[in-house]
View 1 (spheres, helix red, strand yellow):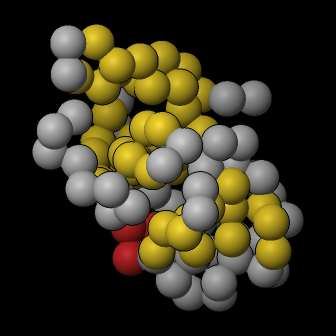
View 2: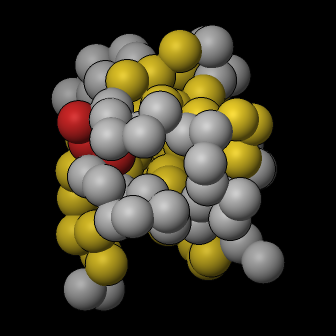
View 3: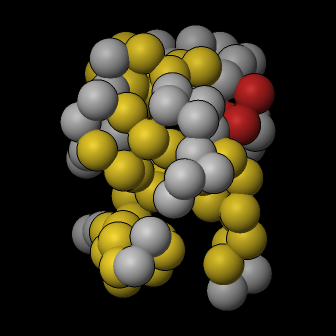
Length: 96
């Protein structure tokens, strides 16, 4: 966890899925690395106030819930539950 830079998405692969791990003022977040709208690489987006902004069409997603806040995407971003233990981040499960 010490390797995370605040507000900077880090791309990881877990079980064949591309995910982003992020540290923000609201905690540690794990979300899908791909925008559900057109498949944009969210690692190229930016993080602001607990949200991530898609680099292609500027859809904004809440990191806590994956809910789309604005932009053309109406689908939620997949969110995973991180478990932090001994400085390591484990991913528990995908949200509904």
